[in-house]
Length: 79
Image 1 (cartoon, one colour):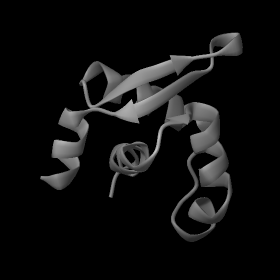
Image 2 (image 1 turned 180 degrees about the vertical axis):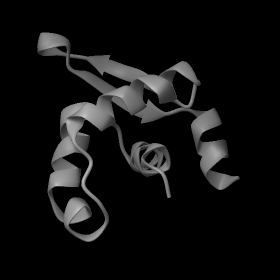
Image 3 (image 1 turned 30 degrees about the horizontal axis):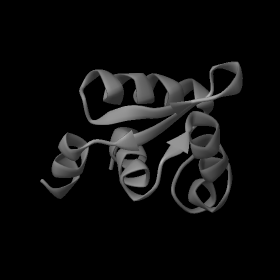
Image 4 (image 1 turned 90 degrees about the vertical axis):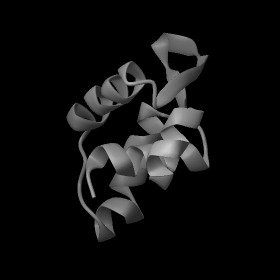
């Protein structure tokens, strides 16, 4: 499984910011699956957004963005 699909799967379940996703990878997910530094997570989020698989659902303080899977993203996961 690629990092893109891992991120997409998590965002299909619940909206997260890049920081929240990083915390998940630093926790149990990173302990049992693989390590994903922020230098890989943020570019993947941009790529997924450019492909229309995720979208920004909220923008907060200091540029914090919350992402969620789009219908196209959910269809990609099912496929």
